[in-house]
Amino acid sequence: MNQDTVLQVRDLATYFELRRGVVKAVDGVSFDLRRGEVLGLVGESGCGKSLTALSIMRLLPKGGARTVRGEVRLGGENILELPASRMRDIRGRRISMILQDPQTSLNPVFTIGEQLREAIFRRAPAKTAEIMKEAVAALRRVEIAAPESRISQYPHQMSGGMKQRVVGAIAMSGEPQVLIADEPTTALDVTIQLQYLKLLKRLQTETGMAILFITHDFGVVARMCDRVAVMYAGRIVECGPVAEVFERPAHPYTRALIASVPKMTGERGRLATIEGQPPSLLDLPPGCRFAPRCNLAEPQCIATYPETADIGPAHTVSCWRSDTR
Amino acid sequence: MGRFIVRRLLHGLVLLFMVATVVFVLGRLTGNPVDLMLPEDATAEDRTRLIKSLGLDGPMHTQFLVFIGNALQGDLGTSIRMRQPAVDLFFSRLPNTLVIIPWAILLAMVVGIPLGVVAALNRGNMLDRGAGTIAVLGIATPNFWLGIVLIFVFSVELGWLPSGRMGGPEHYVLPVITLGTFLTAGFMRLTRSSMLDVLESEFVKLARIKGLSETVVIWKHCLRNAMIPLLTLWGVFVGNLITGAIVTETVFAWPGVGRLTYEAVIYRDFPLLQAVIILKSILILSINLLVDILYAYVDPRIRLS
Image (cartoon, rainbow over all chains, first blue to last red; front, top):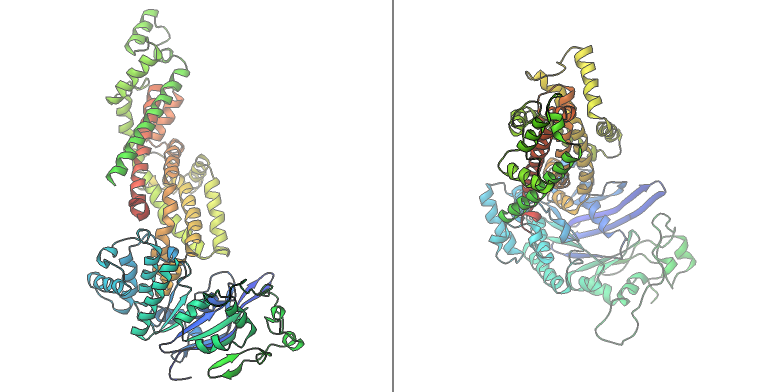
């Protein structure tokens, strides 16, 4: 394991065992997250991005979801094998997470101060009065105006953007090495989104924490991330530095995704779309999962899954036809 | 908060006026009360005198105004059977009821709520199903039947507990169980279902992300939210306790207001019945007001809007 790697995920698989069969929602995901970097995890809805995050946090929803294999190494130890109590110590302190919808992420019956206090107390147990001072400072760090008065307010007295800042403050109050941000701006207004992204980027630079940034928006990836991993139907199909992937996308799915982002410059015309639907996770094709929608597909693509191959500096892809442009 | 309470009080007054009206009209529908109050051999003069003294000679609306006027001064009539002011009778019996109702509520809270939480945490397995079955039985079992069965088993057959009347702590056990069973089962089912909703919410996920222990996540973050729907149904539960007390107190010969109500009905003591209904309505309304205030305390979204 590289010195700089803070989080190493290897062959992570999380399945839903239903009566109709096994849904392979995450099926062999591997990536490294290095100190101080922002890794984007991109893909369309239902491709397994959020479930990957929840598998890492070991907070899978009840009802059949189970991590069936793989390793998640945080500072050398496989956290998937830790007893529940050790995992709880790690959550919030070494690895933390920002959820998607600020409207539901905060507990409606407790004050902002109390919800922050619980998180800060875990890092630095102290009297409530002292922790409240830290809570005010934490709110100031996430650029909330008049934090002294906000501390005694309830979530419903705040706007969505402000709530998401509070969620950020809570998630980061344990000073984690790794922060998973699961589409943190999807539920926000466009103008607020940009502010939030800038804030997150600033805090990341200040603290040096690594961020796994989950999004479906390539525009956000370009703004936020150092590297990007593209996910399709439960697997990562391409991974590399953002500039490299944008300039030389190797997987037909990545190319199609980039082509479907609206551009402000260049020729006008219809937005590019990807034909067809992602495969059912209950009944996956044996070969490349994108093959049924891919216009470069050959018999080999349908028969066997392509091995991950290096195609440039830190640029990997799983595609038989990646040499074809 | 002050305005909220004042508004609730005004609502309560309007409701109380409506209750008084209904009670008054129903009272007149059952026939002339004078027939009940006079001995068999009363003369026509006795009759007119009584009618006059009761203010029953005027038209309905005048009578109603007199009734309301007296009620406002705290006079709800005199019991026919016991020849005492109905209000005095009610308040002399009320403490006896108030000593068992809190125990029934306590039983429901101490047994029903934790059982509901445990059932929700074990959703779908044997524990949940067992608790669910018991709860359904608890809700479906009628008070009077449960009371009689308990007396049969624990007083008659086993001889462990007294079968009725007020007395030391052992006298409380069977009436409290009888009165509290429905409430316990209701609390359990409601706590279970609202806990299931709350357990799925994102803020519970965030609480876990913070690294809080399961104890704090469940008993602090989840339960406080799960209590909100429970409080909403308090009004229904309290009404059930008060009506349930009629049956329970009758079965256990417990001299509370429930038994007083039963006696008023059986002996056609209609001024007493009128008074009991109005006073019980005041009781229920005040408890509901209290619950509303409590509700606002638990759910800040209500307190501040």
